[in-house]
Length: 226
Length: 232
Image (cartoon, rainbow over all chains, first blue to last red; front, side):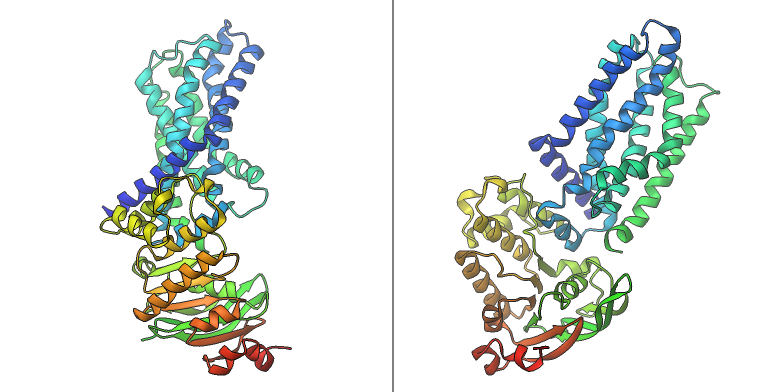
């Protein structure tokens, strides 16, 4: 119970700080909308090929815009040496990690949910046809991005070029999750439900989430303290 | 049992030994002042005692337990070089945040009590980013004392404090000592530190050059230890 309370305390703290400053969400959202707009010019929204690609392009936008939020995750603790206070407090590394990951998840998901209608308009896609299945994929794909992004944010927090290092480290690891999310989303935004031919990608996404969440929870104490 | 025991601790940065076979102990109710020139290893030692980094060799024990144990951390308070409070939160929100993380029974009541003790009750809802430097430092002191720790680890606690913050901190530290709490502090401000210290440890190039009780000669002449045990 105490563990769960500490996770939520960290999440609430991060969300409150972000709501007051809006430093990560604003830049992430602006970036996502601009890239969606540029994609709409690059590909003819009335061509079938462009519509088939749209789901894949969407995850490229989410991956890049999400990194802007994830970069701030542990970097937020650097001014005033706040990370020291958290490390010296009686909360486990796992609680700190999950609290931060949950906060990032909410922020990244919020940006994605705002971007989706924009995507629908710019790509001329009726993305709500398989709404709940699409939400499931969105949640699983976003958790994959945030869990990997948060652990690497902790790892790179004391590196001077962390803004460069974080995407360099996370994107290669995220390839399987992004592949699965893209494959699923490409069909879902065109109204095709998850079927026997695509369920393998869903299993892969779930497996990725479980594996990387477990590994991150186990490793975070070593990452933070050595 | 020693409140703080450092047993044969080595700490390496790459191949460089920042701490070399450190043996120190502080008993409950004592104040150990860590002194030494820049780069002597004071901050590294204090951070190792606090559990921020693990020693390469040897061990640190707080009341017989490793510092990374959750229960041990509940009894430790730390003030480092930064104030360790969030600029985007108010003074009250900051203290309540840490009160909740430390599992205090009534975080709001404890936070309000410490805001009053540090003279910040009037600005309790103001964001820390709007505070003056002195107010921020007093809030940092309140954060470190909030959970009534039995071991206080203070890294250069008097550096850059204004007069009021120094007075607040000295009063709280004297009270803590009177209550049987243990203080380990690193400092360059010998006069303030030796005024409080019951024991002194001087570090020189990562080694303990002197460790013993604080004597009247040291209090009378803070340069005494450097002159006698320092490298000159």
